[in-house]
Image (cartoon, rainbow, N blue to C red; front, side):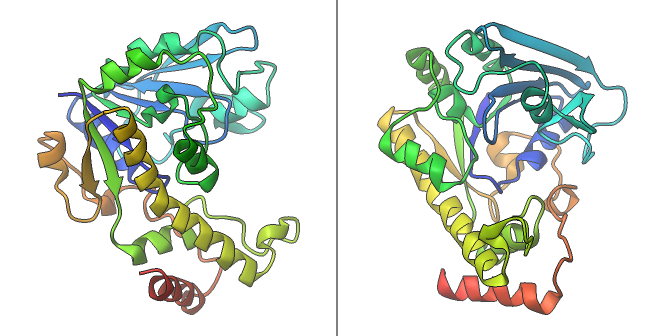
Length: 288
């Protein structure tokens, strides 16, 4: 069985990827974040393939073989790339800050990589293949889903829908609101806190307000995905990130506990624990 993984931003994407690698299964991630759009396919042997579309509409492929241990290794984030661009080994940096000039809407041949993507045992964020690109879990992308207004071009929609119907499609759900709030308030990739150059979070009040909006958008996004798949008659199952069994749902012999995820607990101590605990408890009280 091959699987598709639909999710908001904080949904264990690294952990499920490493578990599939650990079971000798292949993985594909479609761009999670602001365009340019890219895809990265990977194998448990450390073979990586990246795809993007250049400004002329051509499909570009880059490949690399990793020889060290990739399992539970935080260096291999979803944006990792083996070539340094302005001090960072990041495919997003490469596509944005080099002379590649990668496409943001893919009017050309990006869809030609879909065949490779559908070969993967686990396909993460197939929303791109349905025509929707952007930051997962945000209201901006959620509004596109709700309005059925895809922002990517030249998508072979009938082909994609047919292929997805042949897979086991999973939508993640998070019910532990305290942990979800903690991930957003102080977890990896949180908003800038009280930075004088970032006006929308340059005070504690604004920071709490903006993070609260993000958490609520994340919760709504699960429903937006389900509504979209219902619209296309694509079958799916819900996966509870807190209580469901990875081994049973994804037919995996070997799994990792979520506490082993090197990306899961990268909490930053930019405020004292009493302050962050107050933010989290007030969110849970106000938005049960």
